[in-house]
Length: 460
Image 1 (cartoon, rainbow, N blue to C red):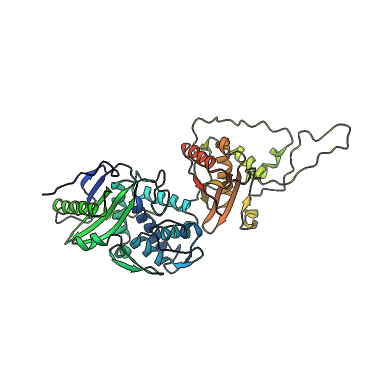
Image 2: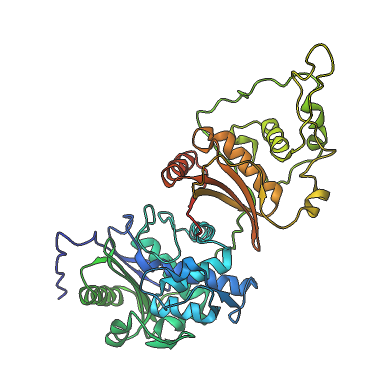
C-alpha cells in the first residue's frame, strides 16, 4: 500500500508526473501543467543544447572555454571556476550534469551563444520545438528569476529527449562521481541512484522558491519509467515520493510496448530577424513630412537594394519607409554648413548631405570593421543598464531591428544608446545607457508588444 504524506503548508507548490518512457504514455499526473520554478532541472536543457552544439560542430568537447567574471561569480552550487580560467567543455558538462554547478552552466551558455541572455533565447526555441508549451527559460542554471518557469509535464518531456536524443551522453547522469577538470565532484542524485533498483538518472534541483525537485528515470527489464516531482520538502522526502511514483509506473506500464522514441527536434537558428507585432499602433507615420529636395532623393539607392528575406516584416506596424529613413539618418555623420553669404538665410529646410550610396549596401557591409557600431549618441548620463532585442546574422538586420524597435517603443527607449556588437555567433542588437528601472520597464513594455527582450546589466 502506498502512503502519501501530505506536504506542509509552507512547502513550495507540489506537482508530479509519471510517464512510460518508451511510448510517452501518461501514467500519473497531478498539477502537471502548473507553472512552477524548475530550479536546476533547467540544466537538462543547458546540457541538451551543449550536446546539440557538439553534434552540429559548433564546438568540440576539447574546446577550451574561457570563464567570464559573470560565470565565475555565480552562487553555489558551483565548481569554483576563476575569472579568466580556461577549461575544456567536457569538464563543464560533467560539472553541470553531476555537481549541478551554476558557474559551469553559465560558462557553457556564454561559450555557445556569447551571453546568457542569448543562450536563454536558444533554450526557449528548443523547448518550443520539443513541445514544452508552458516553459520559459531566463537563465542557464535555474536560480530563481522572475518568469523562469516550467511544469512537471514539460520537464518530463525534456528528460525523455535527453535520454533518447543523446544516449551517448546519458551515462553522465548515473555517475556517482566524476572528475571535472579541477577536482572530483559527487552526484547530487547519488542517494536515489544507490537506493532505487534500476535508477540511472537524471537531474535534481533545489531553490527555496522551488522546493526539492527531481526528474528521475529507471529501467527494469524492458520497461523504463520517468517520474518528476516538484516541491518536495526535503531530499529524503522527495526521493521517497519519486520512488513511490516509479513503483506506480512499473505497476501500471505494460511489460511489452512498442518503443516510440520522441522525434528529435530540428535545430532552430536564432538571429534571422523577427516579425514585430504591435497592437494599437497607428498605421501611418507620425513624423513630419520631409521638405522638398531633402533626403528622400538620397534614399533611392537604399530603396533599390532589397533587404534580406529574414529582415523584420512590415507587419510590425512601423512603415518600411520609416525604417529605411531612420537607418540612413542613424548612419549619416556628414553635416552641411548653411550658406550665410546671402542677404537672407538660405539654410532653412536643409538636411545633412548623404554620402554616396548606402552604408548598409552589401559591398560596404563587408568593409565595416568587426567592432562595435554606435548608431546613436548617448544621453544616458553614465547609466549602466540596457536591453537586448536579439542576435542577428548580419549587421543590417541588427540595425534594422534596433530602428524598428525604437520606432515601436519611443517612450522608454528615447535617449538610449543603440549599439550593434559583432560577436563570434552574430550581431547583438542592444539599447544601452539606461537605469535598471528604465531597462526593466522597457523590457516589460516590449514583451507586451510580443518583442523579445532581455535586460543587460553592468559589465564592470
